[in-house]
Amino acid sequence: MRRGPAALLLTLVLAATSALASTTAAAGPSRAPAPMAAEIDITPPTLEWGECAFYDAPAECATAELPLDYDDPTGPTTPITVLRVPARGDRIGTLFVNPGGPGASATGFAAEAGRLIGPGVSRRFDVVGIDPRGVGFSGAAWCRVSNDAWSGFGYPVTRPETRRRIRADRLTNAGCAERRSVIIDHMSSADVARDMDVIRQALGEEQVSYYGVSYGSLLGQTYAAMFPDRVRAMIVDGVLDPVEWTSGHDPGLPMTYRLRSGRGSYEAITSVLNECDRVGRARCVLAGHANETWRRLVRAARTGELRVGRDRVTVQDLVNNALSALYSADSIRYLIDYLAHAARRDDTPARTGATDGADRAWAELERIRAEREAVGPFGIDRAAAPLATTLGAQRGTHRAYLAFESVVCGDAVNPHRPFRWAGTSRLADRTQPWFGRLWTWYSSVCARWEGRSGQDAFRGPWATVTSYPLLVVGNAYDPATPISGARAANRLFAGSVLLMLNGWGHGALGNGDCIRNRMAAYLIDRTLPAPSTVCQAAVRPFPG
Image 1 (cartoon, rainbow, N blue to C red):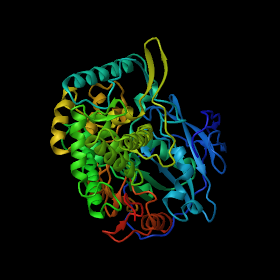
Image 2: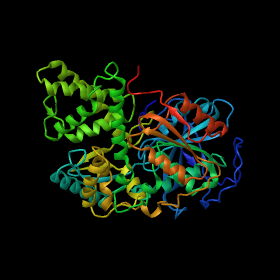
Image 3: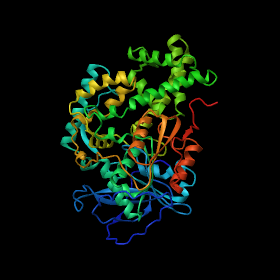
Image 4: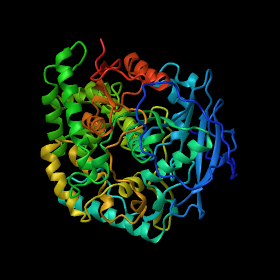
């Protein structure tokens, strides 16, 4: 169910609640209790549930007014929207979910998440999505910026493009310095984790059960490190390395390079092309020359010789659309179709069939890319409501929604010199071929970021003993969150177990009974899979 009209007028009554209903956690292996977290010194709100203006039954919604700044808990507040899908059977407790982004709607995700995660989950848990502050129905993170703050391309390749990108970032920051929503200064992942803990108390839960994918994995790790004694069960899927996200082993490098997403994208497309050659032409039309075709078309895009219809295909568009296709094994076929038709047209330009086929496949890739960009590079669009990025152009300016930038620039330590991104992108061309430059520039606006969320950011320590071990899920060929992120989390969180999916796409959510059954067993019974368990993907790029 997708988002409807942005109309939600549900209320919250702040009440002094001295007794809240508690939920008993399912039995599991005993562990020494983790150190107690620092308390958040506010009275938890009473949530008044009502109909959701943007989702069908059985979902119910409420809005909580929580502290804008937890350093001033009795000061100004910010609205936090919560969606709950009540358990359909013998209830265990509440399962919090987050689809990442940063900037994707958790309320939209919660409406379908229980079904996707595994059998029995929606029957045993109230599934709850909290739109993070500044996202969706929990307000909006925006700056009023110049219409010139747009580079006109995905990421810079040439020196003139680099100068244009840096100028666009400077104009964005200038606009934020002049006029921005107040929430931009209070959007660290730590603030969102604090919000989740207050909502936990409001729901009467002693501990948290949680599923988070992509950036949602970072949010989960942040909560676990800040409140280690409050983890009943936590799945982090499509995992981001929390050290590289925040302080970094080398803070002189941009965060979006440190995460190695460019390397993950390179390994993902290489594995797809190798798989194409392996399965043969009956299942993949590029078999026998898949790698060479990709390399040849990248070269053609760089020299301006690749076209769709009468339009030139830039290397930025080709790489960006290829990346988008890699987010789902179901989408990879459109990339292969385009490469096959484009290669035929390149060889025999007069062939109308090749031209039409390339154009159709390209149109599908453009659609897939738009869906991915709507939820952010570290998010999934499976049941998550996409959000607008710009609105309200007037007098040479527009209101730019900057949820992704507000979180990333607040959480992470980044270089302060804009041209550091240019130097790192040249490094990325060597170490993270094709995709590293794209990923590196995702964070370039952070060089001179005007927001102040970093004052409340949590940047470790990350090595943590939680009250119950985490289940860490990693995909072998994830283009956004490479398996190295899952391995890092597995090392940092004591007793955690790494469950690997041998497959393609971003995150493992819903990809076969092996994954779904193990996720469900962990959440419901707190049964961890055996260490080194590997699940085979049910969805593959070349079925047959």
